[in-house]
Length: 233
View 1 (cartoon, rainbow, N blue to C red):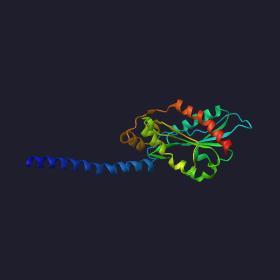
View 2 (spheres, rainbow, N blue to C red):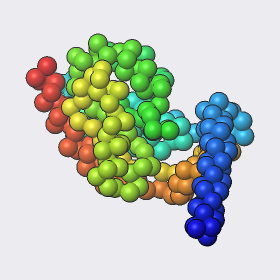
View 3 (spheres, helix red, strand yellow):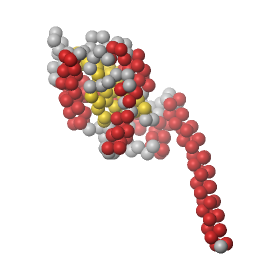
View 4 (cartoon, rainbow, N blue to C red):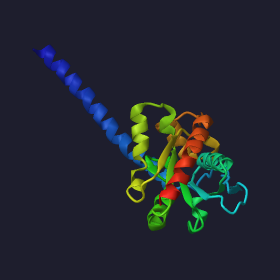
């Protein structure tokens, strides 16, 4: 009987240690996550290239499409640029811009919006833009895409999780299509604290996992949906 009590006491003590350890780790992790969002200028990362390009011939009847993006490390900007090139190759005129530089969607017959995912959410400038311009966006065909590292493991569960990231945008404007793409993890583009959290807590490996064939194919298949939806509207 005493032996059994001794075993139970040892198990209880071990569980208590695990519980106390988790209590100590929780505020540490919370503190580091807060630093990720409040100290973006502390130990700053290398400069991000915010791509801004125009593609396609200036033809009178050519549809004009806006591809706007929100990025933190530049990966989403490069994906947006690739999508813009493919859409222009189909005979359209395309402007690729950072979302923060877009004041209005006037003059565009279709809009494609893309965002990186941070801490399980779209970047705030993207959600703010859609909410502010939802009335105009509802009048034209719109498509969404996201770039997130969770899709480095392309499972049904991860795709379901990634797809749900777009729910805040769907609640405002229904898209004609969505693209879910894996991203690129480049520690040199992150601040010290971002790198620390992503490398040692999230444990996301460094590397470029973007599937350019998937991205280009999505853009090619998207074009008729944008054009045909224009005619329906």
